[in-house]
Image (tube, rainbow, N blue to C red; front, side, top):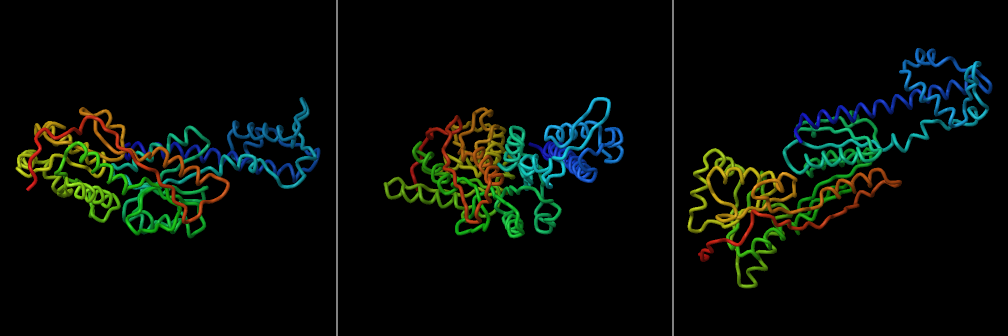
Amino acid sequence: MTVTTIAQRNIELTSVAAKRAEAVRVLQELERMCVTLGPSGRLPRHTELMRRLGASERIVLKALDELQRQGRIVRRHGSGTFVTDIATRGAASYAASVAPVLSKSIVAIARPDRSIFDRCMELLYEESCASDVVVTCRLLGPEQAATVDIRSFGDPTGFIVFRRDLAPLAKQLYESGRRVVLVGAPEPNQVFGVPCVCGNQEHGGYLVTKHLAELGHRRIAFAHADGDFTKQARWQGCLKMMRESERLGSPLSFEMLNQDTMAQWAVDPSLVQEFIARSDAPTAIACWNDRVALDLLSTLGRARISVPDQISVVGYDNLEEGARMHPALTTVDHLIEQQVATAVELLTGTTAPDANRTIVYAPTVVQRETTSSPRFVRAMD
């Protein structure tokens, strides 16, 4: 999803929330008017109510219908609309009757970066369309996340914060008394201090390496987007599988491909050809995510390098675009749809989740067309 599309949906969803809030306001005003008039008091005509309340005809008429349904007013043909004695019995209002709908309002906070979290925003939008949850999306850059005033987010039922690097913001919201769920996996020994939903990154790294090793690959490159891949939980899973292979007498070697290298390949595909032609070249590349893998497949295509005949490629995240590629991308599915749905359930449940609540989903490898046994298995150095 592009930033423009997310922004458009953000406007649409915010508009829905505003209309619901306006409906509640009008009902509350009418209820107070009923209490003031007392039993048998006559309400003004709906056109006068529109003027007094500054509301549309549709909202006013719908409010009167609801008050009549509750037995708080009675309409007498030719005489007008009158307050019943029920309307003065306590302060229970129509707002309470629609509170379950209005309370299910969620602010989703993320950073647009062409990652799985863009897909999460799409899934959250789909979740809202299929339920009574109202979602407002807030996209923050790195500097904004550090300086944003949390009061600007309003007071929704809760917040879904995507990405672990936004964990400080999530914790700030949580410590202010808000409901918060962070969708994103912690680094090794990292503690978020807020409820968390994530995939098992360490097991995912293990599965990727195991998949390639079982196909016969002994030299594997790991292409990451940014940061230090060796500090990630996923790398610990890769190391675990490499240690197992070594114990079994089939050692694996690896090398890292950073973001700069990938960018150079995209500009000059001949550099990829030189990489593949090396006598000790990897026969497979495991990419940090599907976006990196899809960009790499494009670069390999321009360099006229056949996948998987000359080199295998694996992604991570199971984005829909990967399945539509030719060849279709082998990837890891960490059940992001279930993660988003679970986060919504935690926020809209009857009780708030504990700060230490963590729900972890087990990933699986989805083998498609970009991985196979290496055609030429070179001897290890």
